[in-house]
Image (tube, rainbow, N blue to C red; front, side, top):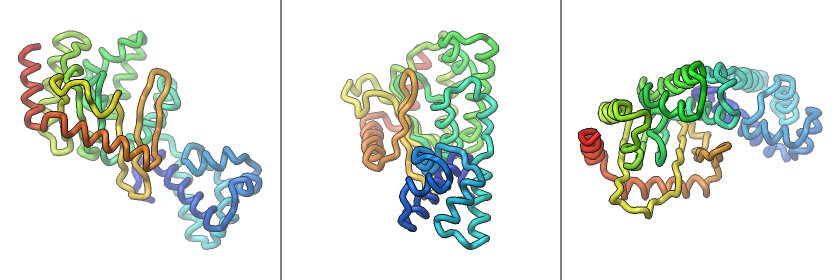
Length: 282
């Protein structure tokens, strides 16, 4: 568990460990909640990694769950402290709704992200000018736009450093949408062509000729983590929030959709030629 990337992943891992320990002892969530003077909802949020861990609660639960070895207890308490450490994105907490802060935390911990883009260029592949143009559509002040741009550029850090692998399938209409004007789009397309040379990016274009029988009605992302104890998470954003899906049956459906998109979309080398063609016409 010590190898997990960010605090969000650590919370999920520690929560899963708490659930395993509780179930191994045959203790119900209600009994666990009563033991720490809390609610069943609190136990559920802790086990899902959606609640900060108070050290007193952790000690009480671990003792209840039969953890008597001082070394094991210390390791789990240390993990709890690390899981509570704020990530860099908390500095932008005033700009981000809570549902998106969760995504940024997961993104920071992911080793691979598969994404299907139907509206904008994926955020991790956007240029600074393109980011500013997209954010400006939200009617934010210049100061807010500047901070939001800085935050998104910081999100791109792990991809720039080669620590994050992307498989991006982009609808051709996205590549033709002149967000911010012709020069901004040209700069964005040129950046994609350069990014496509990186071994950490597998880039495909779903052409207009592919028709409307796509494998998914809207964009989504699938996050996979280096630690095998963490299940894949599907992220689907909508106008006022987002869905986080981690049930194996749900994840399998989206994995199948991504595979189908990969089949109907142009191969990476052909996708580069498509982008070049659009660039020449822009």
